[in-house]
Amino acid sequence: MGTATENESMDSEGTSTQEETFTKVSVWDLPDLPKGKLPPHIELQRTRVLCGSLAPTNTENVNYSGAYAAMGVDNSVRFEQFRDNFKVEIVRLEEDELEFDMIGIDPSLANAFRRILIAELPTMAIEKVLIANNTSIIQDEVLAHRLGLIPIKVDPRLFEYMSENDVPNEKNTIVFKLHVRCTKGSGRLRVLSSELKWLPNGSELILGTEHSASSSSAKPKTYTSFSCSQDTRPEFSDDPIAPKDADIIVAKLGPGQEIELEAHAVKGMGKTHAKWSPVATAWYRMLPEVLLLRDIEDDEAEALVKKCPVKVFDIEDIGKGKRRATVVRPRACTLCRECIREEGWDKNVALRRVNDHFIFTIESTGALPPEVLFTEAVKILEEKCERVITELS
Image (cartoon, rainbow, N blue to C red; front, side, top):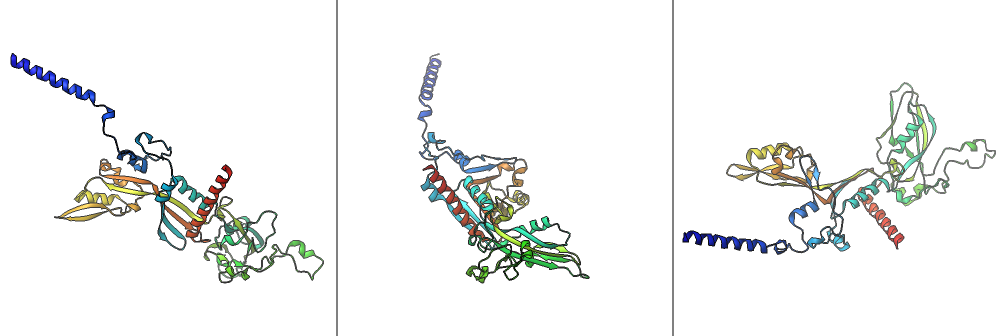
C-alpha cells in the first residue's frame, strides 16, 4: 500500500511537472527564423511555378511590398537589387534569330519587350500599289496584299514617317517596279520577289492628268517627287535595297498573262498592320527546373528515359552493374508532364519553372538583325519610362 501510494505520488508529481512545462512553452518561445529570410517552402512558392500532373500552381507573382513583413522580409522592388540581379546572357545568335536569357526580371517587363518587338518597332513595307496591267487570275487587292507582306531589307531608321499631307520623296518612300510577262506557247511562269526592282530615282509612272498637259517640253510629273537619287546615299551605294528573300512566290502566270505595277513602301509599325512587324515571332518561356526526388535506378531509369519525348533524362553507369537516371537537358523540357503523368511518378520527379528567369527568342523578318531589334526595343521602353516620369513630375 505504501509503495502504491508512493508511486501514485511520483506519477502525480511527474504529471504536474509536464503540465507546467507545456504551459510555459508558447509560440513566442519558439526559435525565431533568421531575419530577412523566408522559410524554404514559402521561398519555393515565391520563386518557382510548381507543375503538377494536372496543372501548374503558384503561377501568380506576389508584388505587395509588405507580403512578408511579419517575417522581416522586404518584398518591395529596389533599384539597387534589380541592378545587381538583372542579367542578359546570349545563348544563340544567328543571322535572323537570337536566343538569350533574361534573369532577375518581372514577367510584366519581359512581356513589355515582347509587345514592343511585335508592335512598336518600325520597318519599311509596301503600302501603295499602282497596277498598270494585271491579266493574271489573282485579283488586284490580293496581289497588293501579298506584296505588302514581303520583307524589305533596309534600315528603317534611315527614313522618315509619311503623313497624309506629305508628298512621297526620297526620305519617306521606296519605289519598286515589277513587270513580268508569260509568253504564249510556254509553260506556267512563277513570279518571284526577286522580280521587284528598286527604282532609286522614284516613280516612273506618269500621272493621268499629265497625259493631257499642253506643254510637252516640261518634265512629266510622276507619283513621287524625288529631289535626288537614293543610290547616291552611302548607305545604299554598296547595299542596294531589295526584298529580304528572293524566292517568295508572288503569283503564277499562264501563257499570255502579264503583271505590270509599281509598289511604294513607307515606314510604319506593327500595331497599324502586321506587315510592318519586324519579327516573325518574339516569345519567351520560363526556365524549366527538373529535379529527381530520389535515386531512380535500373528498370525504373529506363522507363523514365522513355517517357520524355525531348530527351531531358539520360542513364549513367554507377558501377557494380547499377545504372541511375540523371537530368542532362533540363532546358529542353517543354512541360509536357509525361514523366509525372503516371500515378506515383510525381513522388519521383519534380517539375518547376523559375519565375524570374526567361528564355527569350527573337526571329527577325530580315529588315534588321535580331540583336539590333532588341536594343531598339530597350530604347523604346526607356523613352516610355521617361515620358511617364515627366508627366508625373
